[in-house]
Length: 279
Image (cartoon, rainbow, N blue to C red; front, side, top):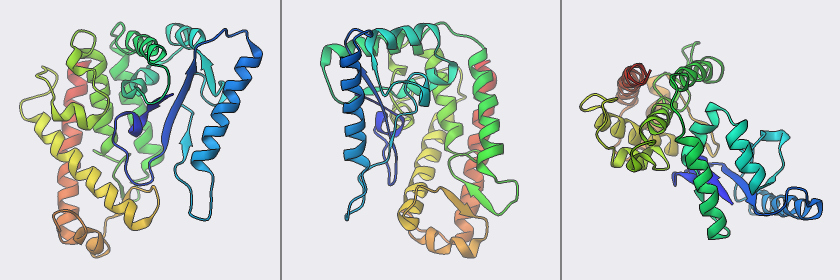
């Protein structure tokens, strides 16, 4: 069993989904064994996400598996390796930078990780940063919904967490081909020991670390406060007062809004400059 997303990068927060992919070693033509593994995954999903009187533990998301919703819940190793070689796309290279084995046979996990590394850190193309920028613009335009001016989306909005994640994932793909130290799962771990790179200007690594910590702290407090997986704040300082007072370093609503705007403006500038260099 492999974790991606926030579980893969050891960055789970309140209301985080568990992004899981299941791979088994066996003959892809063995129908009985194939169905046993599908049943096992359905059982795991039910145990972890079933609603009880005490609530549910986690929401399980298996859409990052090969072929997404159309693919098998558990995939044979040979089919998995073939998929990565022949059909996997750029967005999957980005997503699999967060791959981490969390359960199962060690030898199988090592073989899967080798296949993932060959895929993620394979040949470089300028299409990778171009694709990431295109997808980033769509996310901001279609999902963040900041255009109306009444809300700010911490994750998907202008200068939000996705800016940091996408820049670092593309940077990992580029640099990780030759440098083992870039093969780290997750933004926080990479930022904590960001190696020297010509693709970030002096001081940008420190700025991204501070911004990531601030935005993730704000996101966590917001999720605890709302008891949802939402991540948007109002643009009215008075409305922000209760949230601002609950941060690790309490602020006024006006101070929070000013810091948020300054932080996201800096993140966007670093993101654009970094992507320019990577292309």
